[in-house]
Amino acid sequence: MENISVEDLKQRIDSGEKLNLVDVREPNENAEFNIGGTLVPLGDIRAMQVDEIEPLKDEEVIVYCRSGNRSGQAAMILETMGFSNVKNLTGGMLKWQETFGA
Image 1: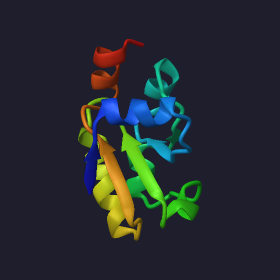
Image 2: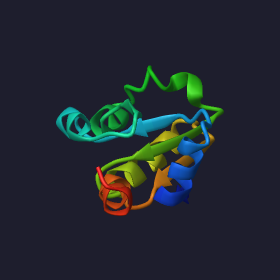
Image 3: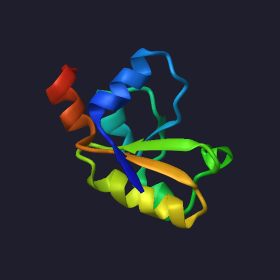
Image 4: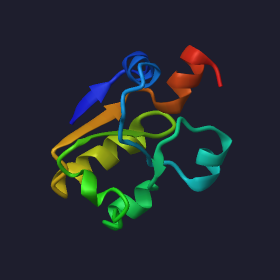
């Protein structure tokens, strides 16, 4: 698993790059603030219920959560499921909001 900083991710989003973002937080957290990722809560990933992102196994997938902890766990699980290029957003949405605002 690699890490990606909020600055690098924002630069890639701002440049219009097509990214595969996966939000592993709970639905209520996603509703409060999100950066456009597909919502797949960590519990679903633990249960291997990842049908919506299954086609991305061979593509770069960037996972994020509130602080980077759950997404780190999710990244490791996804790698064991055969995802080949998973990156964890360091600091998660807390760092994003601290750096760029809501």
